[in-house]
Amino acid sequence: MDKNSLSHTSWNCKYHVVFAPKYRRQVIYGRLKQDIGKILRDLCDRKGINIIEAECCPDHIHMLLEIPPKYSKSQTMGYLKGKSSLIIFDRHANLKYKYGNRHFWCRGYYVDTAGKNAKKIQEYIKNQLKEDYMADRISIKEFVDLFTGEQVNKSKNKVL
Image (cartoon, rainbow, N blue to C red):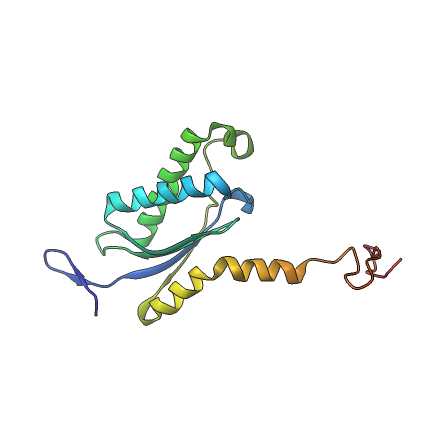
């Protein structure tokens, strides 16, 4: 069992964390995606937080974090979201027109203890983009019939 230790403590605290940009705007693409990843990595390194697995999806971020017990989960999330928001607005000044007042992330977040399921959560995070893509493909209404090539009426999904 992999355990970390502080001066008087041995610990194994892993958390699955999900948070999203304000209004779930799909802004985490391309250069911004890489930049956000570097920013979050640097912030975690400063506090001694280990990122086991992470994925930047178009409208949210999944992370499997190993947080030392000297930091609470809410303190860690406040630090990550607050500092990263300031750095993102400093590097990408054009975002202030969409978000204003340096509020890049939504107010809430999801956190769950990993416990013995760390491997399953790690696999889930790795495959998250594929699952999101497949879910989007299933929910898209077809406006062209794939078999005949004719246009489909948008309101009733009938061939014109």
